[in-house]
Length: 133
Image (cartoon, rainbow, N blue to C red; front, side):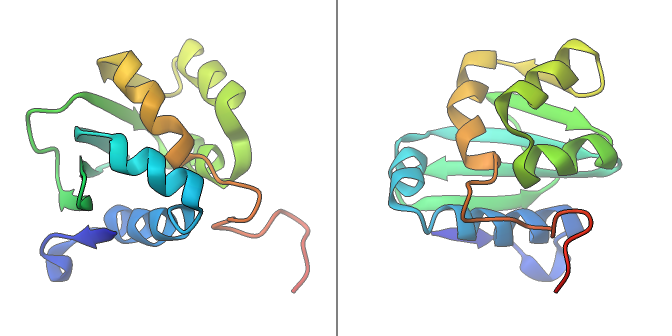
């Protein structure tokens, strides 16, 4: 359901998001939500950017910001990683209000995307601090 356009040229952000979204969309509730999304959303972390394209067929990740975009999220790595590793909605709102993470475009469209980008209890991309193997 999640594919990468020109995988051999994809940046690290796109590769990480592909793995993360594939895990997220293994959950039927999130897969159903993703199938209802339409359009392209941009994600920029530091100097890496990708476009997440949603259609009934699945999600396609493209390198760079491919217009037209419904909405874009931008922020430094240290702010974005906690959002997708369990920070959740409240942490995201605080980061935006404090100006550490910026959004542009249609914020209502972005609200529909947010549940897919926040880690579910079953999915963690990074181990919690102090966790042992």
